[in-house]
Image 1 (tube, rainbow, N blue to C red):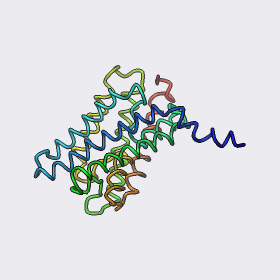
Image 2 (cartoon, rainbow, N blue to C red; image 1 turned 90 degrees about the vertical axis):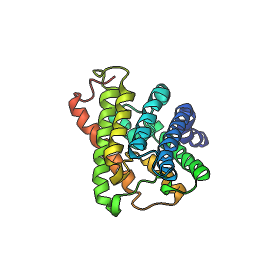
Image 3 (cartoon, one colour; image 1 turned 90 degrees about the horizontal axis):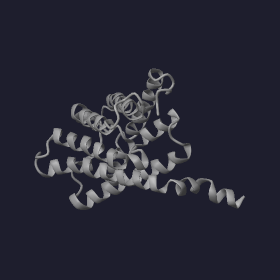
Image 4 (cartoon, rainbow, N blue to C red; image 1 turned 135 degrees about the vertical axis):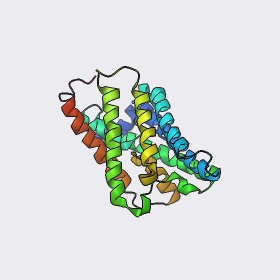
Length: 235
């Protein structure tokens, strides 16, 4: 009995610690660069600009996919991890380690930004415009659906052009941040929203940024399953 208790839950961490560590590092870099751009934009009087912030988010995601994709598959997002699991392309035993690693990486990034730059721009926290949580719930769901749809189509479908997944996904993140960031913050990622919320103590409507991305990603799995003959066209 003792042996099973010692090896059941911790075993999943032990067997995938390298992958989980890569997820923590990747999510740290994503949040550090992306929300750091938001904070720097305010400190510099708008020198980065909104489009610049969108470019930072998109480009860092693309760079990280090419850097860590061969190690951890480059999720950096609890909603993506859960979607890969429900689609059958990710083992259940790695779901919790990945989500914990992603969350810790995001929190560490926000904490370092707080120390370095101070509590400016709400640490880049995602908040619904004018407290309209229903609007943000719907839009974040759609945004994450689009993102996960692109991930599945460009990254897993064997009919897709090889080597362009990182570019396609990064462009999608940047595009969505550009046209919907002012309304919802364009999170599409519970971990990205968790870091600033926890470190800055900014919890208004935070649940939206967990529920909407998770539901949006799951919807993308359902739809793409139909387009790929039950994922038969996947690697």
